[in-house]
Image (tube, rainbow over all chains, first blue to last red; front, side, top):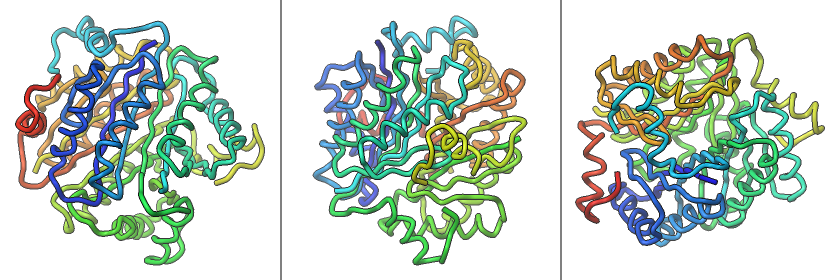
Length: 103
Length: 103
Length: 103
Length: 103
């Protein structure tokens, strides 16, 4: 099983630069050892169960909780049985069809 | 604490009408007794903890899991300390400013 | 053709209550005469072409532009040929299957 | 002005592999010459106006329109005045704080 979750999370009651909060969340994910990718608009993590993916969201909120009374979180999941390694594999499928793309 | 989670979840490998899957998910939420609202684009549930909100997503996937090998899930969370009753309260705040709106 | 667009838009560099901005956007949509629905998490508008739906987003940004240097906008579109009246119709399809639901 | 739009678009009434449709959309964006980035979960494009960003969505739908009666589109915009080059810049801001990250 492969779950890809792409999410962005930020306080909506502070005016601090967003990169401060993104940095804190990424540090927490790096510690977890899960495969991840930071993009300009979200963080993508791959897990082997939905529970693990949901735990990543809970941990990310824990990281921001001390700094804010109101947090916005958007998460998109692509949940697929009988697959793995999709963090690299999905882009590879596109490149197999149309050649090298910007990543 | 009040968590509002607005989510939509559907198989991407079946051609069945989406309302079949929405119906199954709503039946599960009705059983849970949590306050919810079905909209034309998503289901909104209010919980008192983030863990409860994440559990709603896990249960919704469980409902669809037998029918599909690939499921798409998008969820947006508005997480707020020191509040409650926001399923009705957020719309009320807008109506206090500009009068009756379509809901 | 029927386009349902569910969107939320807010400045991320102000600490003003969100309902202030939602109110401004809803007033603009009411003026347009398009069918809409305010939910606790987003505004849903139905249009007959994708261009019209995209114009709603552009107008909503115009309303907020004077108040902020940074605006976040999330929009989900359900684009369907050969249909109409889906703002009410999609919920009706669910109720036909499982009876009255909370809306 | 800098608009980052992260979007994913796919038919919901076909069972074709998603990479087929992603490939068609990316080919269209490559032709436009706009700076873009394909990620495992979405395509991110940077434009200098909101109108241009909305046009990218309209063109992407045009590409898929012949293949489907029902298309799902999710788009998140980060709209910021007085900035540019954020496709690279936002990740750089994070790396300035916590060092090299996976991208």
